[in-house]
Amino acid sequence: MAPIAAPDMITPGIEDVVANAKLQGNAGTGDHTMVLNMGPQHPSTHGVLRLVLEIDGEAIVALAPDIGYLHTGIEKTCEAKFYSQVIPLTDRIDYLCPMTNNLAYCLAVEKLLELEIPERAQILRVLLNELTRIQSHLVWLGTHAMDIGALTMFLYCWREREEILRIYEAVSGQRMMTSYFRIGGLALEPPIGFFESVQHLLDIMPGRIDQYEGLLTGNPIWIGRLQGVGTLSAADAVALGVTGPPLRASGVDWDLRRDMPYSSYEKFKFAVPTSTVGDVWARYTVRLLEMRESVKICQQAMDMLKNLPATGHIHADAPKVVLPDREQMKTQMESLIHHFKIVTEGFAVPAGEVYQAVESPRGEMGYYVVSDGTAKPYRVHMRNPSFATLQALETMCKGRLLADVVAVIGSIDIVLGEIDR
Amino acid sequence: MAAPMPALLGKSAVFEAMPDNAAVKALADLATDAKFDRNELTITVARESVVAACQTVKTAGYNFFEDLTAVDWYPQEPRIQLSYHIVSHSLKERVRLAVRLDSADLAIDSITPVWPSANFYEREVFDLFGVTFHGHPRLTRIMMPENWEGHPLRKDYPVEGYR
Image (cartoon, rainbow over all chains, first blue to last red; front, top):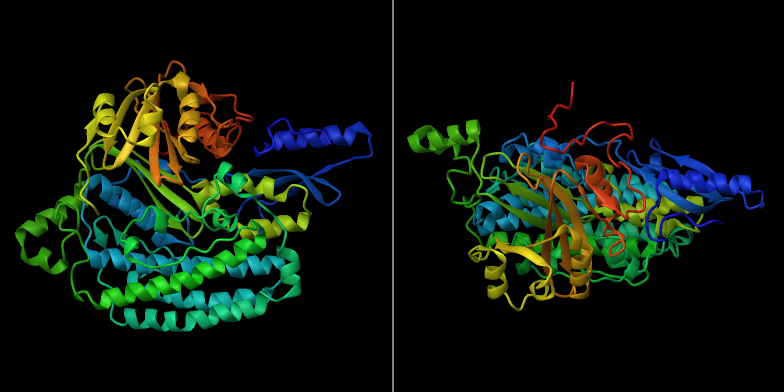
């Protein structure tokens, strides 16, 4: 087989794959390869990912992803909005973890403004973020298992996800595009019954994760399809920019929540599950353990919140940035003026540039925000985990069977919305 | 949030205040400017020395390439700022390398030999800002269609696109 023009680690372009296959096809060596197009409309690509595969029989010779089908220019749109108007856009980047996006963006702008966030708001943010992680991992588990053929898993995972979406709806009014976080705190105090419903979920969740494990972990088909498939070494994972559970499954012990803590994660005690095998199975076990750890973090957050005063303190003390309380706005002239000014002309953010990274369910999600001192961001850039992890797809799939590509895509938990932005 | 250190501007101010920082130590010769603002270190290097600077910080322990993007400062010159974000897993620190490019010659060497993960990021900057990366294995558009005209994230490109 003729080598691809690009070095081994670099994901080739579509033209490289096609050219190489043509060369093989015309060489007459009996070593014919063919080009297969997969997607963009394909149920196992989790969105609109197109892959151009060069296959020799059923083995993958080369693979080139084609992305951009969901490119909506969110980064450009951000430059035309006030800082607070960007928050609803961030939900739509990675639609499976809206709260994580909100958090990363709000933390970046708060860093620019040098705002102090009250403890209660920080812990509520952690609680909601960990619920988001559980919710996102449930979608991953359900769809990944369905790709492999375990259809029942999908329904079980959706059952628990529904509970989390109900909590989302109670807290923010929206099931998916929550936009609940604000620059300087949270939009509203959590509603009556919020803590009870979270506690109910935390009580049932460990048992439900046992159920998933009971269905999958010992299943010979599941083991056969996952173990030894899509192996990625630690060195390759670092070189290719892989973050999050796939990186930890390859043996690199790195979690931003623990290693570069934000939003008071340093107050929580949790383990960071890792594995050294680096295959699809390792990613499965790491994510399941992560869900169990998230339940523990949520429980700690609930306990901390019980010891804090139950009202107020969900906003920073910054009247020119945070919208005033309705009651205050209707009774105090000054609050009314602040409200009017924030809504009509935004708030100026001091000039500077910041990069804030958080650990999303898929890996490192970073927001790079540049301000020129006006009320609109000069530049917002999102560093998204799936975008970088997609570069490792070729390394993981090379030499494996076509059916393994489906398992590997499922295991890196790809979200095309965040890749294309 | 801990109270942030006051901002330090200029190479000499940063290099005197943080002599123990691994990136500061490594880039003593290559840096042309530096900034420490809101607890984030930015080191500016010349266009010619970007690959050398990346190699140097990689040797100094900054092992993981996180992000590359650009900022268009139109109509100022040098127009395009490239920001490389690199993190160290062992030091738990991040450094931002900045490079400014004149609009007359929007080209720079590719850092894919140092970090293969820069592949898609350089393609994205090429696509959306029109910066050429010499030595990139396949520099093609990644977000926009192949036959697209213009570079959408430049400041002189209208938000609604050309009509």
